[in-house]
Image 1 (cartoon, rainbow, N blue to C red):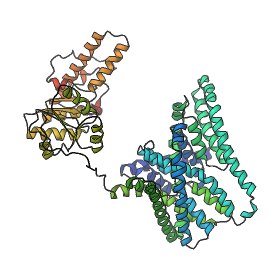
Image 2: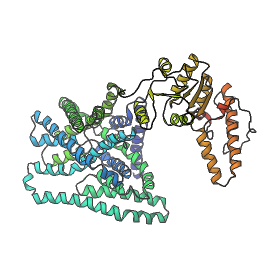
Image 3: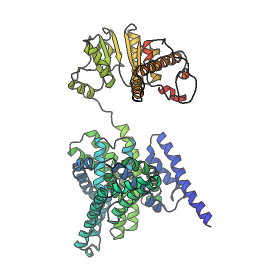
Image 4: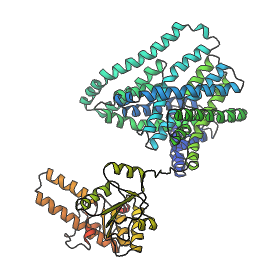
Length: 611
């Protein structure tokens, strides 16, 4: 019997993992994102899909640990000084958004003829944005550390804190709320504040010595267990005090953010975080009760649209009121327009004290889940409906009638350095770029850069291509560099064209386009780096110079073969860390420009085109 039970448990684990492994790559491939993939997979295998699982709530409780660990890792990235610097966003922007949206959403409930208490509870639950969804979206887009992402994180932190007064208000609004005395309510708040203070003190004075003792034991598995203990223990303390588990984990992460063990902790927690967060989204998909939706589909549909629209309007209005740009305000409104997982806690508390009944709890839960499912789709829709940013050309001169003897196209980090030898020798240089912010920034450092798109022949003529003795293509995108080279050589075949190449494949295409000189952008710097390493190891400087020259010659010989062959030719000129014979050094490269090329080590098979 025990073996059969164990086999059944294993079947459920395999089903969960299989659903995620199958759904997520498919949804990411078609551009719908991993979150929607998990939610759909959960719905398919849940009690209202194939019925593989019948108790989604039990899985959801376990899966909430994914959100907890996610917040711990985010906390590790936020030093206390950085968090203190965000205090205005947390208690200013966050409080204003939560308060204003709560009023709007309560009004939506009152328009539906519900009581004040019911309208407030339903609306306040929807105000609490899904931390898991927003943080996952920000992480996938690499925006957690940028200003607009930090503002969203600040709002989420305030919402996590707001669960405490909201739960207190639920008790106050309960039909039997008079039985709860003011002293009891104040004691609950005091317990919550005391838990935060205790956690801060423990983190400041106990955690580092604790991990130092464990590190001296040199037992990796004990460090992993200790990391889990800190995360889950902090979450348990906060939950027992009436706060959110995620807030406890976040505070623990912040307190350890300046610890010498920070990176070790992050590495230990990361595998658990990824799996459990995926499990959380699967469980949310399973929790969508299709019977409730079918029985109340009109009510659910109306309130999903009404709540999401009202919340989005509130978020947008607050953002604009605080001087946020239209695009960021609109994006924030769409990303944060859904309800969140903490609403489940609030609705359960409201049902327990009699503010709402069991059916209303199920309907509200369905509304929250559907809003979470719709969020990735709404973001995709926003991406297609909003126009791309148009750069303002105010204060920027267009390329027209330039006469420099050298034309530089692209003035990023590469073009700026390449210009210095020419300018120091008094060469008349004309510079064009199509990045307005860069042009304005360059002016602050004494550079006159004109606005112009180097892929347009009319712009090249206006930039003085007909007068130039040399053209330097310094753009960073490979396809753009190749397009410019082809245009220039087709129109003025005798002009000298020098080109920056992103990688080896780009260098070969530029050579075929007829450029006179090309350099892969990292080749010489990587050679200097390797040479400095040899010198640091005690190698004679002259021997280092000889080795570096040998690498140049071998690379040029390899490129020579690839020009007439394909990208896989000449691999035997590379020295790998597996003992294989290599040809003697080549001393006569085909073209001097071809001898200056980027890093060559470690490029094999299909990856050869990236070098």
